[in-house]
Image (cartoon, rainbow, N blue to C red; front, top):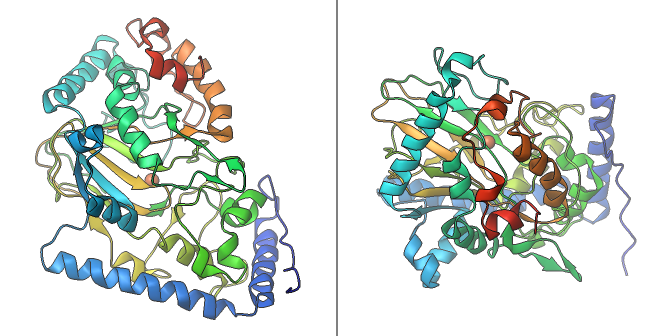
Length: 425
Ligand SMILES: [Fe+2]
């Protein structure tokens, strides 16, 4: 028997004095690692070596002109014939392109439907500019449309094809352990998000490398401390990025860029063809890099009240100054066609490249995999209310453009997948 490790202080709501709380939790995390018999530097070097090996392979594959992002065909998901090698690649890289998730003509028709829906309802006259500063906008027309309830979006969300891919992705996670079923891999919660339509000729500054699952709460709430237990208790070798334990219940600190839901994967469905050099999504396709990011602020070169720049109300930044190794692996999606979908593990570092004078459209519907769990069930109550009134969902700015739009998707149009996803059945 070894002595129990010292406990960690935790804050279930945003601490009032952030620098003091950061100092306190960092000291406690260091003490806990030390009590496990290894130094923070030793634990960090274990994960650093793993990450270094992955970065080297990714860079080498790119230089050889080999694809880094795994690609599978939707038909194989439907038939249950996804090759074992592709599943291994998905687990290793944490990201995926699903070719032909929807027929190309279907996706292009949805894109046209969204244009009709916004134009009929006078959206461009009513648009008041970005409701948050998360994505920049170009000129007077938005790039990110705060539109959630179009028939096209809801039909995609509640489609059998979407449900099958989400279930396949969820199944990559360990969703039961210690007698707890952390989430239901066969039921999605229909997390409503926005759309992006970026026109030909657009200039866009892109979006810097960042992380979405949380900010200071990742180190400071009791449930995340349990989720990342292996990182801080001397058993870093047991850290499993695919273990959902303790990730599907806890709160997230509120902020303008938060996501209340637990997402196994973030994702979007392409509504136009997009070439890989036209301002597209990049990821650092190394799921274990999360442990690196969690440990890095504890090293001696980072001031005691600094979490490598992570703070509340701003996205978790991943920058050259503290994370040059990780950023070498930043890799673009391959060319995609309308109807393909793109997915990345919720802890993956990602960015959107800048583009000048974009060739072709850059249109996507954001639809993640957000399986049914206590956290998503709670959020679903507010989603139902937003759906009933055409309001912007609670995680997004309160813009509410669609409240008066008569042709938004109606409750009578829900199918069984949609009703279950909203918690109506
Ligand atoms: Fe993001």
